Image (cartoon, rainbow over all chains, first blue to last red; front, side):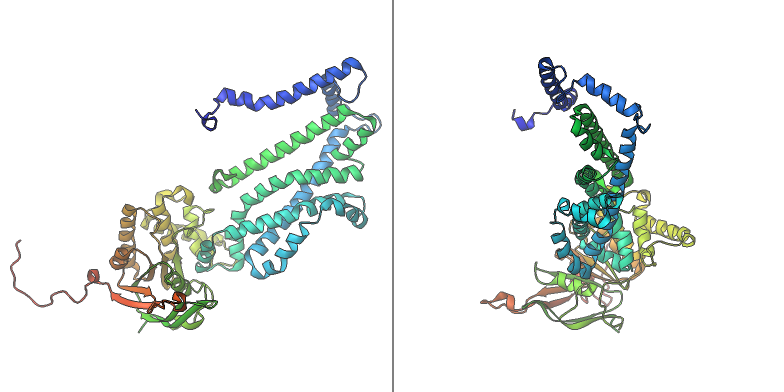
Length: 270
Length: 255
């Protein structure tokens, strides 16, 4: 039988899915054990038990100086920045995407500009953002917005253009104005695509968030990682990295479920 | 008095003429089938009727009104595909015929009950009442086209344009759709233009069959001549009108 026709059973499929995780864990444990055997106070690859202890401390015990559990504060402020950034970018993407997709005049005006603007590396203009908006929240949210909005605009305007022309004509023969076509024909069909595009741009959004926090912040997940780097606190860094990964995964999963629940007509394409 | 007047239409894309000197007039309630080879301009003609495009020369008037510059509620249309809105339930698709004309595309709360009752009656009529809450993807091709026709007729257009409406259906479903369309036509007396490349279908359903073709063929540059209406058949009585014997023949028919 050809390899392309050999399918794993349910149990094997589950095992195969877990296998890479186990492999990484095992590789880490072997490396860590080897280093700790040579030097018990090695900081580069702390034992898994050390990481678990550290994680427990970080999640439950308040900071001695400020009396707050810093991890939760870091998480809250980072998620707030992320939500604001992606939210604003999504709204902007939706508005501009609809305009570019539906209105020939807007398309002529904006589509060239958006394709050029999307080529500007967002991190390269981060200093400008810090200069213009200061070191506060605005510049960090703006970095996320500027980083992912051009992609969202391009993607969503293309999705509007992909709506079959027949539907737009049909809507007109039913008496729909431009506004009604945008509101009742284009926008609802765009929503599943919006969620899909936001899911894709969450990766870059995290990147921009952590970059901005690493450079100028006093709270936040990215700030914490880059702070404890000075003390080679690998156990803290690894805890934060795993926590961020988990958050990103849960957000992605939640968006996927939302799309499936809210837009049953869009099929299994998501 | 002709209802739709098509007066000396020319249409060209760039230097290439598609239609030339197309003129005809259609009475209210007539069913016009439009046939022709691929690329002979019959779809272009339908787009002109729909006012999706403007002719290079000439004009099309419905009921003497000035030529339309964009598609509107005077015209109803059903395409081969994509004629219903995939994100709306069957019920909402029919309701769209009423709600899309409002300012924001939603019916006011007061009007909703009556509109739902009317939509339900329409769904009953087109045999989709049981599927009112389904999305179009759950319907078969024939059901989707029935919905599209019902939706178009709910908006009560002056003329109904059908662009190969049954082209994607299997032969059995197609026959059912013919019956369905004939019944609806009996009831509404709608003026219909139907583009098809099935000659039998054209003659079966139409009162007239317009054939689009190039009147001349230039062997050195076939694209230099656009198409026009080369035949205008009277398709009533199975394509042989005026052949029925009018006088009493006093021949005994077996009982």
